[in-house]
Image 1 (spheres, rainbow, N blue to C red):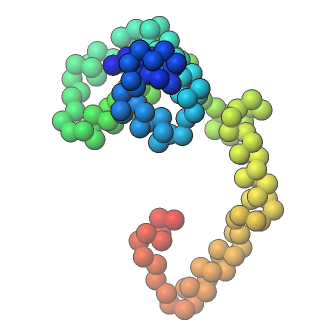
Image 2: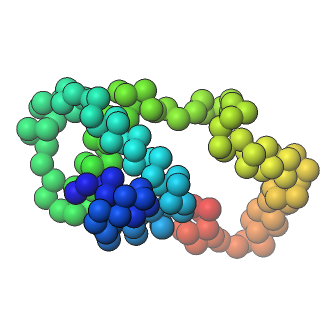
Image 3: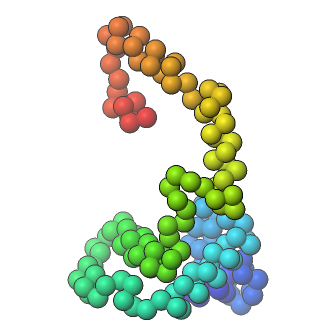
Length: 144
């Protein structure tokens, strides 16, 4: 499948594969952002060697279901992106000003600091009251 022949790329040589269009839409990429991501992926693939995914992994690990194959695809793509230097995308704690996530991080940090979005004291008081009332939580609430 030639991802660069996608209409999002602007070449209009053939229609974009249905899965690629669905993935672009689901991930929320604009046509321009999708084009840049696909071009970078193609550049990464063309400069990577087969040693990115160890031979034992390529030869010995075989998926037997769609969900397993999807997981293997993700894991091997992650290996390739990491070895190419594309990952990690950012420091897990400190954001650079040019990071696309920075504006959202700053806005959420302000909301947390202002107590608008996150009321720790209120959550603790609710939990104490629930325990005094003898209430129990369902498993799904425990996960939240």
